[in-house]
Length: 368
Image 1 (cartoon, rainbow, N blue to C red):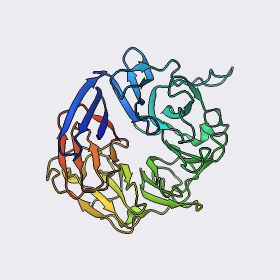
Image 2: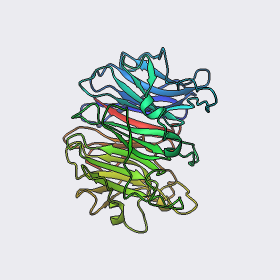
Image 3: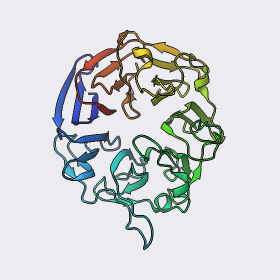
């Protein structure tokens, strides 16, 4: 059975499908009225689901389910920064924003990203969280991270190399992409080639605004990112990103939040552009939403809008709100700021709406 976990501005919902992905049933809400930023089911132990939430009475925290989301309990020790040294600026977690399961060789290990930008680790399945001092207390952190976005700074796109649990990537808005090869002890900026058009020097080594960074599971040396300033690809061990969004239609541009990879084909990716003109309306371009697909690693892009609204659909899709499944005929799913969920079971060639009129959707994740 396929499950879509939906984190929204006003609670947690789930969509569950039959074996053919034709009939979907909406469940919820749970945690009605509370902000749910991210929900992730553990691929190593599918009964375990973690949820990053901001509740009215508990504030920013993590909830854990051991029965596939039927019941939940709050983490015994939610993510929190270490107490500040005398004379240093104190930091407090305002949002737990991102969740990533650890390496398959490390059952029970999870990572979380926060706002303000912080990295946290749990070794017991999400019960107790500790700050990753190598990043949070790094002497360059205050220079790497800029509080310049409308929503403030936050850390997201925590990637664990499937070949090596000590090899990590993170994305920071605004900060950039950073890499660690020692499990989070030391970090290096990885932003060469990425534009920062909002800064006086657009080629700075850090201070960038990646919206979403992804790593191909079957080809881990290939990374993609949807950035505030375009769509990029990086093939390691190279360090210079290539702006593959330059091949997008000029009237559409290459600005958006999510980017999703085909689970088996590292040349295939999908994006959902938004209007990124000077005033940044953050809506679908011209009110005509469309997904764009590349099958040649970004050298060309194809518009996919069959079944989507033809006009006056003024929504966008946030960075965690689009995903793919692992079926032979790849399924794609996205949730909108207008509260609708759309699905394709043919790699984006056609779309249909699964749910309407939900609260603003922050995240959509798939689990089997």
